[in-house]
Image (tube, rainbow, N blue to C red; front, side, top):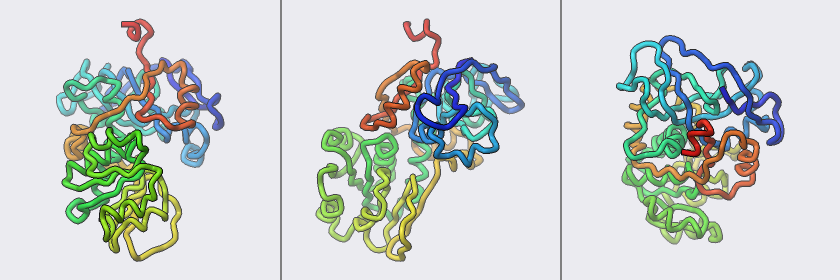
Length: 321
């Protein structure tokens, strides 16, 4: 099978496609023929060696990828959530395991780590929902929706930020979204009550809308301490890529890791239902054959795209159809 692999940390030339053996599922596992998997910033961090310590005990080659969509190819044991061979599924997987992550032609995961693709959603779009969507759901939990009525989301034009806007709106929050001027229409469509462009003084613009400060801030843009002035006393700051910040008692800081999504005992179907992921709007920036994975890493590192670039693992004949 084809897989995007890293054998040595470094530049974009260090991720390439290799042929590896097709894995066999163990008891309680499913094998998925992967069609699509997005390249997330975490995958770039893996390749660059920014997570090197976490991979010290994991044998090479390292296979990136957190989420995928495809078709169930084989099941060992009883199917869960009525998902059987031939079903179109989306799933999550940790690259921090000997079998590697999602960027391979075949992926084996516990049967509870796949969910049926919602009706009307393409496989390439579905590949972007599981990990990014569950991360956004954890963000909402950290905000305590019963007490956070007004929330600022920085970097709202990105995939995670946009998902947070949608789930916060679903939870009854009023969302102030920070993004580019070109993001305004999209953010309004996602449910933002107000949009602040990147050219504005962020805190001053927030205070014009919420003079006492907002109840919560989701710092998807990783701005850090400067954005805390937008919070009221006792407000909550949620960091997804935590920075080391000076201590404060004025507000509550909370952080999370995408890897926490693996810890809960529920199946992916239950997690998706509980988090309300059916409201999400995936934005596919481009679909690129896996053979061009190094160029995709270059594009992700360059930044500026709205939406995710998705790797296409289908056979060449299927791509042409």
